[in-house]
Length: 130
Image 1 (cartoon, rainbow, N blue to C red):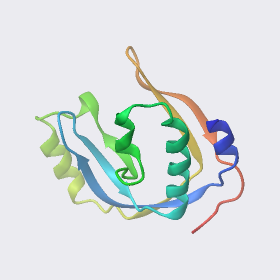
Image 2: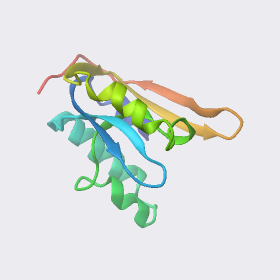
Image 3: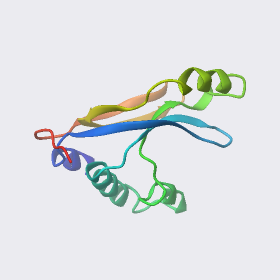
Image 4: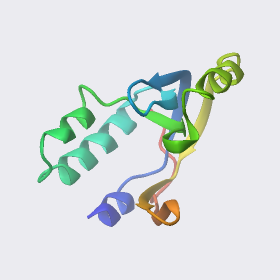
């Protein structure tokens, strides 16, 4: 199913905009992406297909709540003692960049190895711009 989506989705340009943090028990530092029609369309297709049989936790990823982003620091790499210095180091950087989204990568958390790449799927066709 995801293979079919990747083969029917052309690469596209995404624009980073800002540094952000998802707060809570296990905070996540991220770089926010500007929402455009291509990223919104891909997200909608993935969310619709992947969350069909998932309970209410999937609501955080629907179009209304989902924040397009690139995770920078999370999990055991971020804690109360280092979040200040990490944010201080990143806060004064410019996060306005363009990048080409040309693959879908499926990650898996493996207890003995951490986060590993399970599958990388190239997007098909020529680069499309909004």
